[in-house]
Image (cartoon, rainbow, N blue to C red; front, side, top):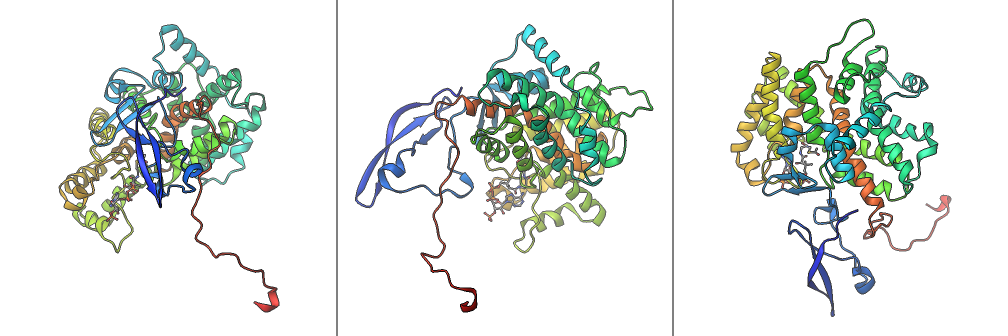
Length: 434
Ligand code: ACO
């Protein structure tokens, strides 16, 4: 449940000749919000905030971001520390249950996840019915929605046991679902999970293994993926998380809410940017463009291309995840002995943009997606799978936020209002008179 913020002062708002006092609440890190929940009842007015840049949709005790200082913490623990010392399943537990697990809790959780990795055999037919070139994000969203049809026994969002079962199923089965989407697209056999591997190793086996050959999990790659999943695991009320909460607020089951979140993540302005970044770097290489020429294009009003992987609604300073990923990118490529011209182009673009007045004035820095694709690319992941890997990492965050939503004392269906600007009352005209 969200810890409740403190209320110590009020704000005064004058609308026409009416003055109302609005409570100001303060979060545990000192951020302040004017509580307008009584505004319409008292004044008849609503607030208008396109893109919700000034709107807090909930109180949450999961993730803290200070975008000005470049701080990110899960349940109070700095991302840098988790990246260095933890692993993805432990971080998943931390986000969803609110605390780091002790040894027994971690053991139980890991075992439970391990024992739910298999999919119903009919999922083979499900994937077989999709076109070969189906985008993995469309396939993953559909497959997660379809889990509700296979497990109608655990769909009640307010039944503690059913929630626990469906949460474990979803975390366990998503790597299998995502790897099936990939295997289907390349026409290779679906790989059954092998629970002898750990969570990330199992995903690698299902993605990159095949039934004809022995498969050895490369430790450098496993660690790199584990790190990337930790860094993607939650990011408070971003577009896909807000989608998951909004859809979840209709009391739909977990699978329905997360399926919607996956679609939201797919967009190029959100998680889909990781695929766009690698496509952008490859286009610069293939067209023989210089970094400077591309940056000029991204700044131009006459061109719709943006410098993908740059800019963020909240970070107006370095995205701390991007710092960690950039370093990991050099380390991993070095350890794998991979020379990547795409990495060289990315470094050149970053150097140019960080010194360019356009990006400096707008406080546009590399975000989480700028270097992650270079790592995925170097370990042999096709670019259309990048966003599915992001979804795999974000899963515990979406789930934690969905669970928190359902225990919020202020729970209500999400239902924003609007200011209507269409025609005023109009009469219907018979077709022959139009
Ligand atoms: N390249 C060029 N210009 C940019 C970029 C960019 N990547 N990002 C923002 N700008 C410019 C805008 O054109 C705008 O300029 P203006 O004031 O002259 O009109 C200004 O910076 C502010 O941009 P907005 O789009 O208003 O900022 P917003 O907070 O709404 O959008 C977003 C943030 C969507 C991330 C944006 O920076 C963007 O499109 N970046 C590229 C896509 C991307 O990398 N997305 C991933 C984000 S991280 C994530 O979701 C996981």
